Length: 472
Picture 1 (tube, rainbow, N blue to C red):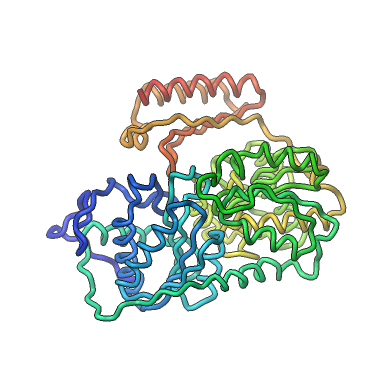
Picture 2 (cartoon, helix red, strand yellow):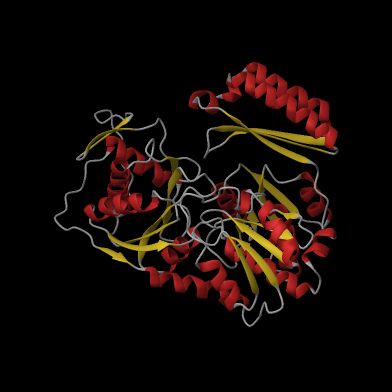
């Protein structure tokens, strides 16, 4: 990729100065998962137009080609798709719009076609009023930080547009999603999920068409919740971040298990037949044991994040395995997996990466493989959980901090750092603390886990008060 020059004659600013006029921009446009924010505030049609144009200019600096575009069910997704497509075609690129589909669909189809990149319009688990723009490279992986920086620099005026007299073309290609459905099934064949009763909470989001179809094709009995595309209700009190409806449905229908997806279905949380949460830590442990037994887990290594539960880590170490932690974010997990040659990694939130089978985090793929794993084991998911490990009590609280400077610079407040250090010293090896600013929401997250509920609650409340005092 050719680097975009940033010279003293063309300094970066807080406004984009392109052929379409100036647009106010925040100090940093790209976050930990692409561009994400409130529609009408950060994300507007004029900005999306410029993002499409300048992304097209940067991505085709070596060769021209196709961009694959997908979207979730948010009301704003059509608007952003049209604006992005206008910018991309103005840059001379061809756009294949898949329409409504999970994020992993875009990643997979980008990796197997002549596409030079992919874009997904989604704010993942965020509320309906938010949206986002995620970029993928031609290999289906998240676009590198380096290339994202080049795109942002170009939007801010650091790149002169390459003149072109040829406009790109736009095509609606929903039929390509069937290739993704086939891809999900192939590694599991000839296994049938017949006899398995599964509840799917689709969160009014991107998986409403694909998930029931693929589970039914694999032979499972499927019960669906929130299974219509609804931009007003996506993620609202449902899906992977609100499991109560799923737990109730699993118990009501006597299902073997249930799966809750987020709005773009790149992550999944499971529920066992007893209504217990089976989060990403448990999924990594169970899938890791299976891959280890099949001699498909190099160095018995798992990659997770600083959020992984201490009970999970110690149980995996007891088996002789190694757990390496990264910063929060699937991009950090993926980078460390490449560095270590690891074949399984993910986040407690249910974002799982397994390059044996997929090119990106994929909630549907994970759910299918966990269901097949349970079927092969000959025992229930509940029994597998009982035989795995006990989590340490863990509490995660979000403290809303609208002031962006405070949210990003909380590490420099001496009183807050002193409160954190005091809590860590008091707990010793009986637990751990993690305070961090969210990369996708205006919050500072406070996580405490300890060997007892009392310790966990006591230090959580202390640290939340400290952060609130800082934020005020």
